Length: 195
Image (cartoon, rainbow, N blue to C red; front, side, top):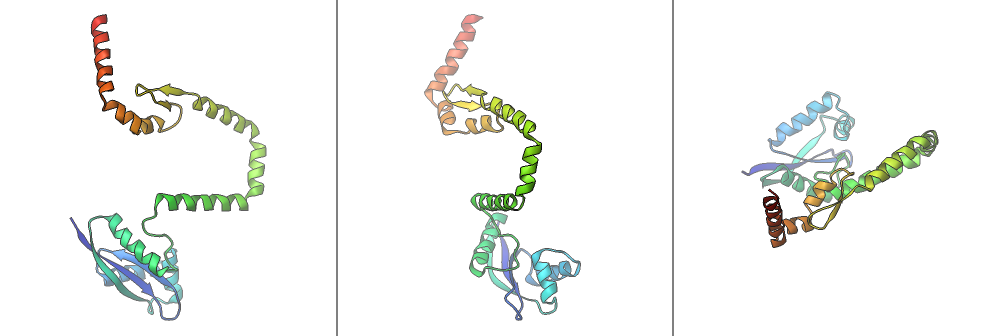
C-alpha cells in the first residue's frame, strides 16, 4: 500500500536558517504543529530556531511530493533533500546508515576521551584489580571454542556467535548439502543399531 508524503522546508527571509522535513499530513497542519511545539518550549534545534527567528515570520513550502510504500522510503526522500539543501536546523539526518552511525560514535568516543583524559586515567588507576579480573573472564570466554558438524568453529562464550555461525554461508551450505543428509542417516542408523 502506498501513501503520499510531502517533503517541505521551513525558512526565514531574515537569515540563512533552514529546516527540511517530511509529512503524511497537509503542509499547513505540519507547520501548525511546529508552531505549537515552539510555543510549548520544546528545545530541539528547529523549535529554538523558530522562537529565535520569530514564529510569525516563519515561512514554509513544499519541496516535492512522492508516493511511498514505507517509512524508510519516506526518510530516503527527506534525506536526499537534506543533502541538497544542507539545512542548519536539522539535528539529525533522516535515514542514517550503519556506517554513518559507527563514524559518529567513533567521533563522540574520541571527543569524550580527549575532554576527559584525567577522569579516565583516575578511573583506570582506581580500578586496576577490577580490570585484571574482567580481563581474565574475557580471555576465559574467548577460549570456549566449539566445533560444529559443518566443520566450522564458533565461540560459545561470546554473545551472538552461535547465531552468527548458524547464519554463516558455510553452515547453511552444509545443512543443505548431501553430506548433511548422509550425516543424519548415519546418526539414525547408529541409534537404530544401538537399540
